Image (cartoon, rainbow, N blue to C red; front, side):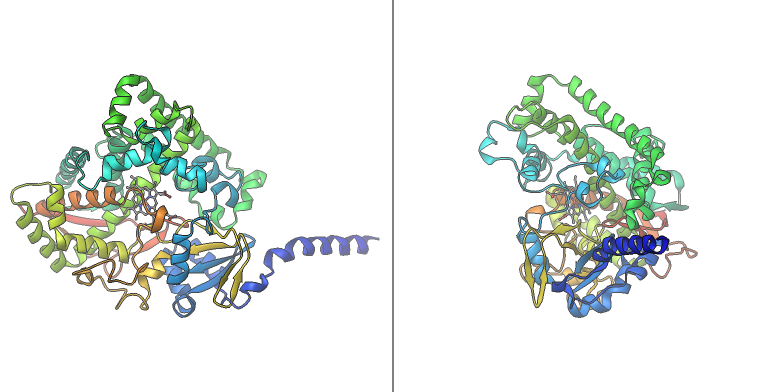
Length: 512
Ligand code: HEM
C-alpha cells in the first residue's frame, strides 16, 4: 500500500514537473544556453559582460539560443532579422506584463501597469493617446505632451535652466572633495534624480546636497529589494511563507505613500485654470499632464496608474542616464587622448560659457561620438524587457509556439564582431561621419527602436552633454592607480535589464 502511494506520488510529481523541462518540438534545434552557468554568473554578481562571455559562442554563430528559466524555455537573441521583427511588429511580439511574468510579486505590485510594461490600447492611452484629441488636450496624450515639452525638435520649451542649475550644483559638490577620489556612481545617481525630479515632477529631491533625503533612501531600499538575485532566479519562493517579503512590502507601501503625497501636493497646489493653461502652452511637466489626465472622463487616468508611472519614471528616467554618465567618465579617465580632444572641442565651441545651448550641442560632433560609443560599449539597458509572440512564428527552421518568451540581448548585439570591428575597443572614431542609414540597422540599440523606442532619449542625451561640458571644462578626470577598474570596468548584476557596475572612484583635478 505504502509502495503504491509512493509510486503514485512520484508519478504525480513527474507528471507536473516534466512539462516544465520538456523542450517544445519547434525549438529543439535551437542551441541550448547553460542555465547553471548563467545562474552562477548572477550569484557571483556577474554583469552583462560575464553573461555575454557565457553565451557568445552560440549567439555569435547562430544569433539565437534557448535557455530554460523559471519553468519556461526562453529564446535569447542577437539576430538582427529577428530583432527587427520584434521592434517592428509590436502586436505580434507584445511585452509581457510584470504581473504575467511574476504574478503578485513585489516587483509587479510596485511597478504595476505603466507605459513601459503595457501593450495595445492600454499602452496607447499611456503614450500616444488619440491624435484627434490633441487639440482638446485629452488625457491620453499626456506623454506626448510631456515629450514635446522636453524633446521637441527645436527644444524651444525645454527647461534647460534645470540642467544648467544642476550642473552648477554638481561642480560645487566636486569642489568640496578637491582632488581626492570620489565615488562617481552614487554622485551621478544623485545628479540625474535631481534633474528628473524637477523636469518631470516639478519636485526638487535635492539629492546632490542631501544624500539622505527620505524619498531617495526609500526608493533605494525598494529597488534593492526588487533586484535581489534570489527572487529573480527562483521567483516562486516569494510565495513561500518564510520568503514572503513582509518587510520589503512595507517599504513599497512607504514609497507608495510618498508618491501619493507628491501627487496630492501637486494637485492641491494647482488651480484648474492654471493647469489647463500649462497644458495648452506645452509647459506642463509629466506629473501635471497626468493630473490633468486624471480628470478626463473619456480617458481617465487613475491615481494608481499615475503612481505606477511615477515609479517607472523614477527608474527609467534616472538610473539609465546615471549609468551612462558613470561609464563615460570612466572611459574618459582611462583614455586621456579622447578626454583632451573632447575638452578642446568644448572650449572651442562654447567659448566662455559653461553650459552649451542646443545649437552648440549639435556642434559638439566629437563629444557626441564619444557619447554614442560609450552607449555602445556599456549599454545601460543590456537586455530588453521580455516579449512573448501572440501567434506561432517561423524563424529559419524553428517554430516558436505562441507565448514563447523572447529576449533581445542588446549587450550582445553591441559586442558582436559580426556587427562591429574590434567590438571591445573604445573607439569614438567609429561614429565619425556616422549615418544611421549607412550603418547596418539594429546594430546600435541603446534606446531600443520602433514605436517602443525610449521616450526620454533626447532628454538623456541633453543631460549627458550639459554635464560633460561643465565637468570637462573645469576638471581633468583620472582613475586612481589602485582602482579595481584599472584594467577593465567591472560591471555587475543590477537586474535582468539594467546594467550595474561596482563602485567606481575617480579623481577630479581642476584645470582652471
Ligand atoms: C541613457 C539613458 C537611457 C537609456 C539607455 C534608455 C533605454 C531605453 C530602452 C532600451 C527602452 C526600450 C524598452 C523596450 O523596448 O522594451 C526605453 C524605453 C523607455 N524609456 Fe528610456 N532610456 C534612457 C533614458 C530615459 C529617460 C531619461 C526617460 C524619461 C525621462 C526614459 C523613459 C523611457 C520610457 C517611458 C520608455 C518606454 C517607452 C514605451 O514603451 O513607450 N528613458 N528606454
